[in-house]
Image (cartoon, rainbow, N blue to C red; front, side):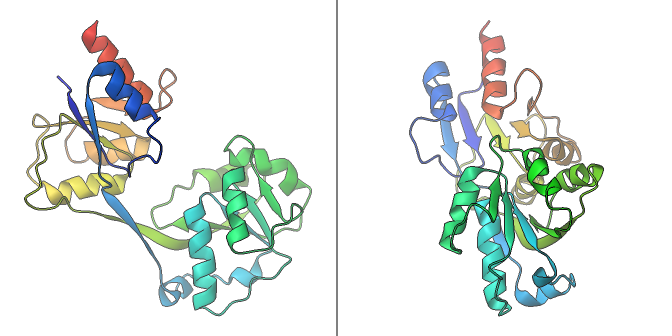
Length: 247
């Protein structure tokens, strides 16, 4: 029976969130503890990729974190980003975050209304001479880059940061009935923290195919997986499982 859940992400800023709804609805306890941290590449490691940001006329961002590392590295490398640079963002919130670093003008910042890079295709097709670079993490998926390639748009991935596992603090109880994992890095943190963990000791919920594959490589089958057609989010998948158990 699931009574206590570890969510391997930071605690939501708002008390009104899907995990709070789960706790209220099913009488369970949700605790939050990230199992990964992000560290930026230094200028030396970035230069090993032989990528010069000034060779590109546009940058794609999938998060505010990517924006921070792009401008951090530009400063470390003493590169002045030209005012003519265009920015293509996964969402309006990410686009608005650019105001921290640039003078925001609509004609140079484009964003998706639905958190999908596909929405940016019309704007990109209007600029056939644009040269694109996308800020990514070290363990990024090529799904977005391949999608653009299918539309004859070439995107150069530029790794500027990496995810590293956070080992569970020694002496801290790990008394959870279900652990919710979102990345292969989180799976690696579990492996490093509990190298003898077996499938029978604790149950896991996984979001994303890569996370599921990483856990199965440890010989552990996830109890709950998302996204699925029926459950697009991990919280909806957990809710369905709890509903089925209580039926």
